[in-house]
Amino acid sequence: MSATERLYYHDSHLLEFDARVIDVTKRDDGAIAVILDRTAFYPTGGGQPNDTGTLGQARVVDCIDAEIEGVLHVIQGPIPESGEMLHGRVDSLRRLDHIQQHTGQHILSAAFIKLFAAPTRSFRMMEHDCEIDIELDNPTNEKIEQAVDLANQTIWANLPVKIREVSPEEAASLPLRKESARQGELRLIEITDFDLTPCGGTHANATGEVGVIAVRSWARAKGLTRIQFMAGLRVVNDYRKANRTAGQAANLFSAGRDDTPALIARLIEENKKLTRGVRELEAIACRVEADELIRSSHVTGKVRIINRIFSDRDADSLKHLAQALIAHPSVVALLGSRDGETARLVFARSTDLPGDMNLLMREACAAIDGRGGGKPEMAQGGGAAGRNLAGAIEKAAADFRVQTGL
Ligand SMILES: [Zn+2]
Image (cartoon, rainbow, N blue to C red; front, side):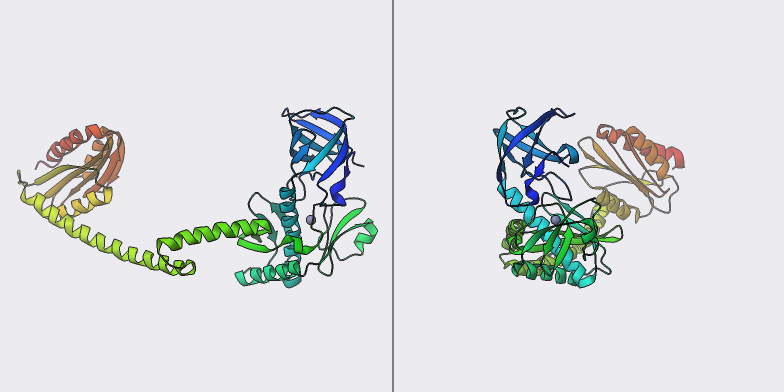
């Protein structure tokens, strides 16, 4: 027998009660826990989080089921004494929310059984939504929405939700939705002609109290189907949020909310075309820029070395310019870009020339505190010592002449 009489077992809607303090203990983490002879506070268990509220002048921040010891009320505030009588008050909105989510889960799980013989393997009630893991073969949006429809019809039929206490023998003869691991008397939650299952949580008096159920998303997880759902007030809050988000997106297009997905799809398509166009223009611009650089440089020996440092030019753009330069014969392009201390490098040579750009790049990168490499005809790199960039490129030009004798 537990030291605490659990008032919530018999009345999920009882929010205020008086009780005597049996014990006050300090937990390992320093928190103060009060044990009462009776309580309406639900302790965390069965996938349902604990209630919060007040106990005398103190705030109840957590409730833990310590089985035989009783229910531990973790409090903040004035510490009561053993034997004292206290007035307890459960936070009503949080309790109502838990009632809606928990009863909603019974109804949704039963709907999956009725329609697809798909049992629920686990349930979690989280801060924003709830999750069930079910054994559903070939899950589809249609199947899941069918179960949601049946669940909502059951809610709106406002069927009574009853609590039945039965012996283990009697339980064995009943068509329970799931088995219980508990010993002794079993507490069953019955929704007339719809669901019968053992459970210790807080439930609605009638299904209508749940309001509505909605599924947000689902995915396959570890051989099961994981469904994110919510019930009651959470659905209303989530609808407000979703509607606001959709409305903001629609305003950007000065369009109706439901027309937005098509407009976004069109915008993405246009953007792809524009990006392709910009790339083509960039290639043309690089060819023009390369021709300009070739014209304004001169051949020394048998080679035209073009070394340039740009400010804040991205790696792709540097590479495209290098490619345009080495399309000309006998060109070595030693290009750099500096953005503060960030340096980028591209070295390339025309195919009619000898020389190893990879080797030159490795040495240049060592000088700018970076890394890089590539092939004999083209190499790329970058580093964090932009101040050494000019020196590294000068040295690469000199080393190229030594390397090739040109
Ligand atoms: Zn339950």
